[in-house]
Length: 130
Image (tube, rainbow, N blue to C red; front, top):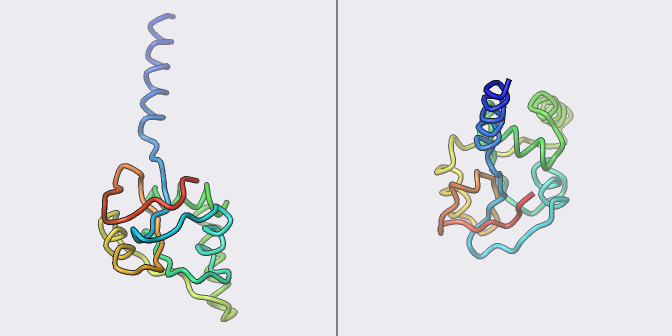
């Protein structure tokens, strides 16, 4: 029984150590933003930010939206489909990975995106830890 509990505890700790800490990033000159402002920006609601998303299927994207916008991948896809169909908005541009996200955000003072906190470097600034 003790062996079974040890294996279970080890399995649970491995699962939790794999979880990434998603952060919102901006240009190094950017100011911090609130979670509410990030939600509005990533849902295209009256923001002055240039927003970048990771591609669909990326687990960091799923975690970010679950935490910040409260939407699952399916809900997010439905939301943007409706926005496009009704002419109320277009989804943000997508980038393939963390290095693409950092390059896009670093190149524009008004740009924001999100990555795993472990991928942050001097080219960008963490502006929100949701």
